[in-house]
Length: 474
Image (cartoon, rainbow, N blue to C red; front, side):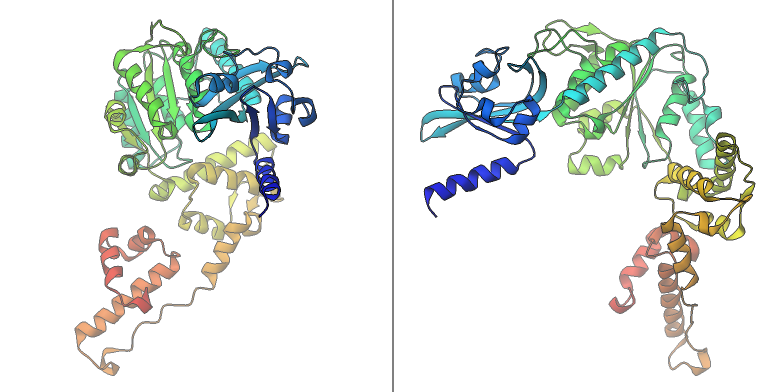
């Protein structure tokens, strides 16, 4: 392949990447600038290519420009926030990774990969400002519409396991110890956390929740700990969530999505009770109760390194594992009535209940989305129903398909009677057991836990028996 074709191919690849790519030579002249970078900067490639960097971006200098800094010192820069203005005066906010380019031992330029965080940063700062305003107001018991915290009385349950958890949580609310909550998506972790806050002595103080998976790591750090003016180009003096939650509760959902180095900083705050804004040399003492949540089993997270061991033992002072809806089926009908009442009021309707087939399906269904999925199914059905009863045709397609599959599952055919069977009684019993296990696995679509419940045996026992079945029967 000719050199010109190789260059064209490289340019085509860089142009196709869905991130801003900006390459300058050793003199700071732009030699490559893809369309994504142009869109981020509000310019066209023609306005940048072949021109000195500082001419196009006059708000930068050799120190504040990540590209020129890398050319000057030859050291890479990773995930560096940068705020600047182009020659048109447009404000641009990015997170950059900038690398030196060498030919042999000679530095010939630098390449920068930029991600736009402007709109996300703006929304995050608006959220912080709103939370600060709410934190300054005196809090009282509220509805979910005005941003006030839920209480334990808002948790709809008659499950013995949930009632026991609530009683434990009431006791834990009397202290300020860190709490770790494990629960699948949709099990109501934030409702549970808000109830703990409302029952505590901190109930009149701020309650702030942050999903750690919702923001890139660089932005999350500044949101949590705050920034100091000049800590990076364009940075302002802003408090972080720890300062805003001072005296109250900070709920960190999906804390395992934090990078490990940020988890280490969180650990230091938990140990010392002090935070330091990005770019500051001063520490600030904060009095914040941290409640963290994960939606995967902590043991699995620790095993694969998704959660630091030292952080786990620091936040796991008090722990709660919220059961999924499939393990508290006594709550399905209760929650169904609650959501019917809720959407009857909202939609000004008079739906009184479910037809028998739908109620039966609700009890058998696994609810992988848990309580949140049940609510959404009810809401969707209320958009379809015309009479007083929700019927099968009003359910989402995946649930109607599930019901149709169950109607067409063939009946269980047991082995022939003992007198017609050639073999001993143990052999006949073994074949009967295999048939029952196969039928249970077929009826539950391979769900071992549900099949074990149908058979009335422990899940571990069923798993062992499945491992002993002939391959053709599994």
